[in-house]
Every structure is written in C-alpha cells, then in structure tokens.
Length: 140
Image 1 (spheres, helix red, strand yellow):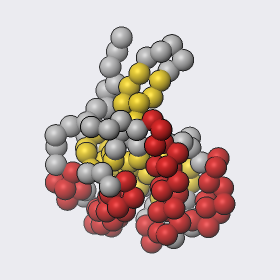
Image 2 (cartoon, one colour):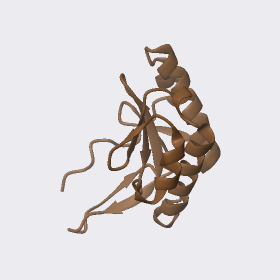
Image 3 (cartoon, rainbow, N blue to C red):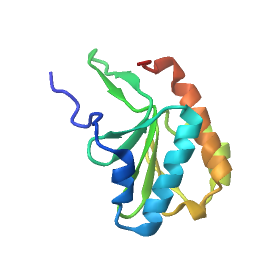
Image 4 (cartoon, rainbow, N blue to C red):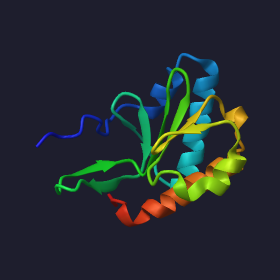
C-alpha cells in the first residue's frame, strides 16, 4: 500500500516562511501561522516542502486505508495564500459571505492577500473547522 507523499518533516517553519520570496506573501504567511497557532494551540509543522500544518487527524478511505493530515494548515503559494479547511465550506456560507475577497475549492480557501479579508471572520472559520475536526484529532 502506498504511503502519502506529503508527510511531516523536521524542517524549520520559521526558516521556510522567512524564505518566501514575495514580501507580502511572507508577511501574510507569518500572520496566518500566528492565527492558526492561537486557534489550535499547536506548534506548526512543515508538511512536505510547502504546507504548514497544525495538529493532526486520521482520515480513512472507503477501502479502509488510513493516513494522517493536519487539522488545519496553509501554504504561501506563489500566486495565492491557501488555507486548508478540512471539513470543507458548505457549513460556513454565512461566514464566507462576510469574509472578503476569496475563492474556495473542496477544502482550500484561496486568498490573494490578507488585507482583502476580515481576519476575525477568517479566525471564526478556522475555529469552527478545528472544532468540527476535533473528533478525528490525533493526540501526540
């Protein structure tokens, strides 16, 4: 059975964020890292080469395979900051309407820059997401 390619590393999150080439994306990444740490109470961990994750949960496929993934995380990509909200967005329509400029994928919240969104609303989305994932959390 194949293992997940994106796994937790021992790499420094601070060094990763400091090396983000775009100054605004770097500052936004550092601000999101602080927000996610406040919400989760977890230390950030670099997953693979570019995902900063907080906490861990177990996911299961229909065939019984399992894996671990961050409860919440983000990546300061070249064109957008991506926040990973694992339960998806169907339950957050009220908050998304007030968030500001964004787009979503299945579990991805894409932001061009933090200045375009209401940080209190973002924090509430993350808080609700973490609470929804709590039953799947792995304690280490």
